[in-house]
Length: 175
Image (tube, rainbow, N blue to C red; front, side, top):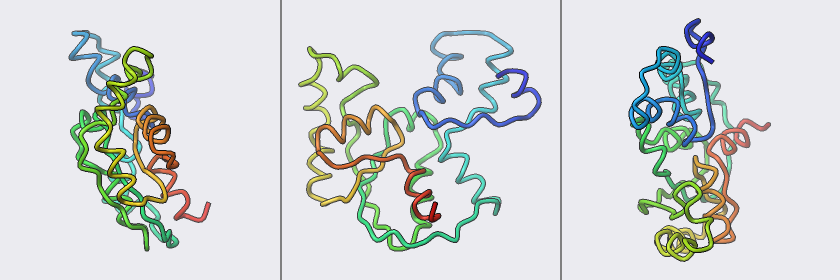
């Protein structure tokens, strides 16, 4: 990836944990001093972050069709680590008739793959209980979340379909 990054190519990802690792954590946590990694980290963007930047520049087509649904949005912990706010909320606000209820839960409990382990499963479910309760109270048609492991956890715990924010944009685009 480094040659592309040095050439000015943006690197876009849909996995909040993977893009966070490339963007920041590999340099900070692993204490790597690597010119290739530094070049890549400067060009890595989460897809919602990138699409919102496109919108702000006027480069994103936003003639969205109505999506008459109510969804709960959960911002995953890893996405918070990107330090870009909640770009998915701003993007979904562009979709006519879409009602987005933001979760105030801090975590779904999965913690990457932590909650998938048999011995940690109940802890993960207890941590995510507030979010699962909110989804039920909101009577959400779907749950929207940027992280794939969070989506797995939320859908398994609530029985409510969980999708990436880009899926909502895709649907609103009529694709």
